[in-house]
Image (cartoon, rainbow, N blue to C red; front, side, top):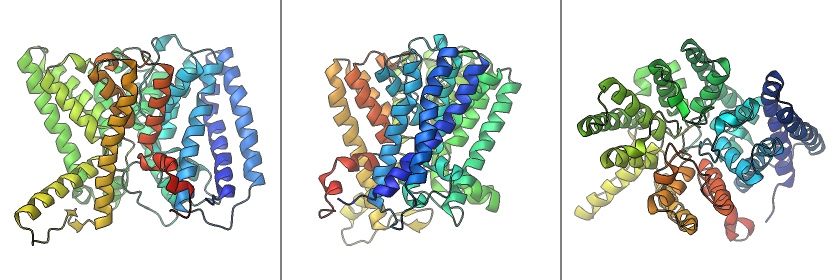
Length: 487
C-alpha cells in the first residue's frame, strides 16, 4: 500500500505540538498548587513534545500530493492512539497510577467516555486531575479539529482528515475554508465553556471545580474531582446548570449556526433535534412516574431533578451522576439502558450510535415492512423532507450492524474476567458508546479497577474506536486497507 508518509509524519508533528501546548495549563496548575512531582512529570513530557513536534513540522514540508481517504483513516487513528499513549505519561511519571491504568484513564478522557479506574480521586494532585479533565475538552470537539483551528496552515487535507474523527454521519462545512469552519466550531465551544464556568461560579463552586466540571460537561466526558461525582454538590442550581449544558452540547453544533442565521424555527425543523428533545422529556417523565410509584423518592422535586440529570447524562454520553440509578426499579434501568444505545445528535460532542442513525434505521424497517405488503411499490426514505441516497442509507445500516457486532465481540473477550453478564455487556457498551458508567459492578458508584490489565487495554482501544465511529479505527485491521490492489 502507498501511504502519504509526508502527510502522516507532518500530522504527527502537529499532534505533538498540540499536546505540548495542551500540557501548559496543567503545568501552571501544578505550579499554583505547588505540586513539585506533578510539575516535573509534565515538564518531562511537555518539552520533548514541543521540540520533536517543531522538528517534524520543519523537516517535513507540505506535500504536493493531496492525502487520500485511506491516509485520513491512518492519520486519525494514529493521532488518537499516540495522544493517549503520551497523555498517560504524566499520570504514570507522577506516581499517581500504573501506566496501564493511566492509559485507560487518558483514553477515557480523550474519547470523552468518563469511565475510570481510580478508586480515590480526591487523593490525587489537583494538576493531574486538571489534565485528566482537560483531555475531555480537547477530545470533545476533536483533537484534529482543534489542531486545524490552532494551526490552519499545516498543508494536510483538513476537511478530509477531520471528517474521519468527527462524531456523526457527516461533518458539514459552515465556512468555505475548513480552517474557518474549525475556528467557528471552537468559538461556540469556547462560549459554552465560558458561560457554564461563570454560571457554576455564581452557584458557589470554586474556579478550579467550575473549570473541571465545565470541561466534563461541554466535552460530554464526565470526569469529576470528587469520588461521588456531581452528587458532591447538593445545590439544585448547580445540577440544573450542568443538565442544561449537557443537553446543549448533545445537539448538532451546526444547528447553532442555523439558529443564528435563520432563527429557532428553522433549526427546530431538524428531525434529529426534535426526536432528541422528545426522548429527553419523555424518558424523564416515565422515570419520574416509575420512581414515585415505587416509593424511592418522597420529594417530587428531587425525583424530577435526579431523573432529568441521569437522562441527560446518559443520552449525551456525559456520564456524570447525582444518584445511583443501579438501585432504581427495573423499568427505569431499562430506559437508561436504551438511552445508552441511542446516544446524542450527530456532529455534537456526544457519543453513541447517534439519534440520526436510529431514526434512519427505523425508517428503513418501515420501508421493509411496506415493501413486503406491496412488493411493486416504490418507497423512498426521507429525512427533513429530503430523500436519503441509497449509499448513505446503506452506510448507516452497516454502521448499526457493525456497532452491535463490536459490542458483542468485545463482550466475549471481556467475559474472560468472569463477571456477571450485565457487568460484562455494559462495560463494552459504555466504552464503545463513550458513555462512562454501566451497570452492576461498574455502576455509577463503582469503577473499572476490577478488570485485568488485558481487559483495560481492550476497553481503552474500544473507547478510541467508538470515538472514531468504529470504521475509521477498524479499517486498519482489514487486508484490503493495506493492499492497494484490493481497495
